[in-house]
Length: 279
Image (cartoon, rainbow, N blue to C red; front, side, top):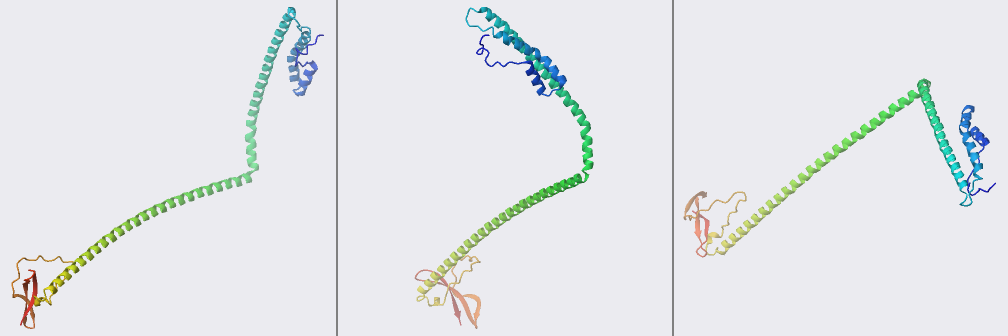
């Protein structure tokens, strides 16, 4: 026999005993195992047959064309069997899948009749436990509801307090601004009053100094002091008509007549009012 180890590298012989062991090892049962064996044994036989023939068809030179033709015939025959094997495998597997689906459908049908009754009996058996669990669930839900309501109440209270504080701050800012404006106005009024008082003081001092400067020339002016100007009463308009001497006034001093007279300074030309007592 020729050496075909290189050409048939990876080849693993298959026997009928190998098939029987493999099928039995899957624990398919007698009927399914027998059916599977009968469907695949022909492929094992053709594989064995061509494995033997192939050993005599090893081509070693170009002139061995008849061996090449025989190799082609064998290859095509094996290809046909390999494709048929694959088709058989898919058919059997599909049948197995469909059988599995049918088994699942029947199981679901029967389970649908068993599970509701089983669940009902379980509730009766576990009545106390289930009742206690339901009460605990309701208590948890009520506690959670109360917690959420309290959180909402606190949130609303916080927002209301924040709004109150905002309005209070606005009021305080407004009052502070008004107080500052009032203080500024009062300060300006005080400054104006002080300025007017200072001006009045300067006016009086200037008038007194003028009287003192002319006292020697006008002895009647020594006792005269300019009358103060009332701060709240506007000054009366002065008349340009000079006051005549010896003008009587409604006043008396122990039977003596008191009159006011207008005196004109011959030095500076200023006009003064003096009081004259006539006995």
